[in-house]
Length: 322
Ligand code: MEV
Image (cartoon, rainbow, N blue to C red):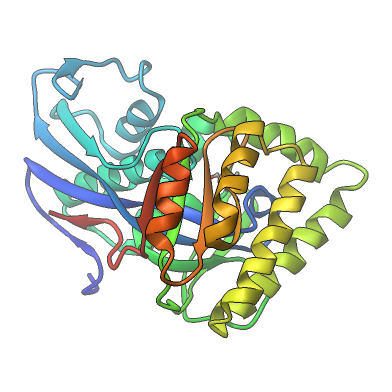
């Protein structure tokens, strides 16, 4: 097994994985478009121990009762011994910041360790299969960010960013995931408090993106993601921010903004170079690129507007045993 793999470890075992923030290309990535995102330094930690029956945080759980846990146990664990899974997270739930992907990747890493270890590309595939198996739709962007940490591009057709990490499959669709160099910037994310519901939202946007104006919309999403990736690689904050705003206009056009999110974007304006909805939308969070030196002011403005705001950096590691 490579150095980078999750090593074998008997039960009890604990692992953690980071949340994520999408800069460009959410929704379009489900249909094969390019996406740029980062695993962020807010983590979910999962501990797994043997038990008399399946439990979550000490409470008896049926495999049918918790979609992600049930699917993970069905797909990654033959059920013996039954396990008690303990999860603690700094990522707000249903916020668009990758709490489910982080839970799945940390759990898959812990179960993989207990089964003798798992290669990281295999962990990315397993985590995506669990997420897709429970949600029914989606791309491997979120789970790959939880497995790899740091900046990633999915299906990049822009400047060949960095080395290919893995290819992830679902049916006959494949997504290629690459490492993208870190420009060294701090980002601010802010959760509106309105939970989003990824599955229905992805299906609704999917109807637009596969409808009569779908090809043109997908091409516009792709052009923005390409330009955003080029700007980030050139460490050009102003141009990156322009592309964030452009991507937000496309997200508005496919109906995933919300008056609360628009209010947060307005609140962010004086202290940020650019901002957008991040993730499935319809609720959830925004991401903003702060004016350098004005990070604290930006956090204050967003908190005053009622959001839970965090300054985030790329997670230096992806899923790992702790
Ligand atoms: C959700 O975080 C991102 C979406 O693009 C769905 C997905 O990629 O699975 C909206």
